[in-house]
Image (cartoon, rainbow, N blue to C red; front, side):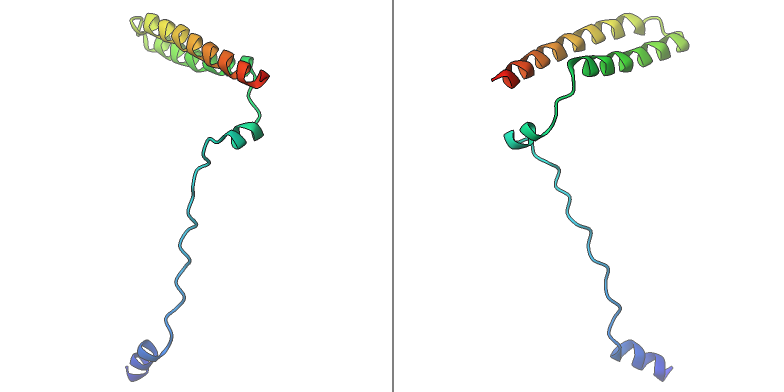
Length: 95
């Protein structure tokens, strides 16, 4: 017991693990935007269509016919928003 007490009191404590490194997400700065490559218009709109197609198919499978017109409207609205944003992006890239 005396040996255990000596070891506890006199030995140096085991090293503590280093704290995890701090993660700071990248900020959207003009320099970052210039470095990153833009996805093509068709890739963005294809991703949007795929996402809504999956939701549309799930609603059909579940037999939720009331959801289908809502999804159709939401898809067309989001498509319009993305096309506007892509037009703005394209005009900025041409400068």
